[in-house]
Image (cartoon, rainbow, N blue to C red; front, side, top):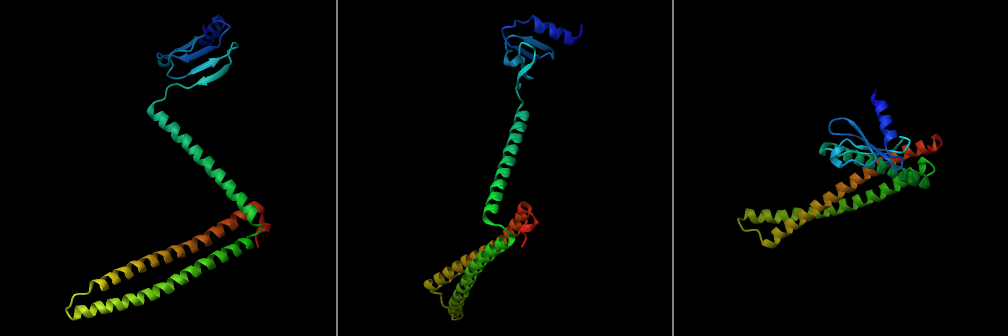
Length: 204
């Protein structure tokens, strides 16, 4: 008698008032019962069948640490992909709501770049003035050194203060210049995406 025949006979013999549980025991044999097995008896999972022998629910068995880690990683990857897709939809909608053609993106880009360049120019003027004062302080300190006299504490403090301010100005200028490049790059990306969304007619 085949295993299928045995399984069918078993299903018929079981009470018809309750659902049927099917699992593989620790010896690799298929078992049927009207009561769910104990956890240690169904490490590979349990299938819940209805009275006609159709699968109602599949209950996973105990996972190894490696399997659990792999499953969690897969779920995290799926969530990340879903979040990226949602973010893309929001960006696309914002793009469509804000612009009808690429020329409008260019106008906004130019205004933003102009404002950033004005900030850079202002910082560069401040840097030039700051550098002149620092050069004067360094010249005075050099004169003290030539005369083999100690440099006054207030002059040393002024030099250090101007050097620190210059470093901050240089960092701010570098950050604004980087922001200018990013603004231009984002505008190009937005124009490309707008054409994809609206079609070739959006290119102006």
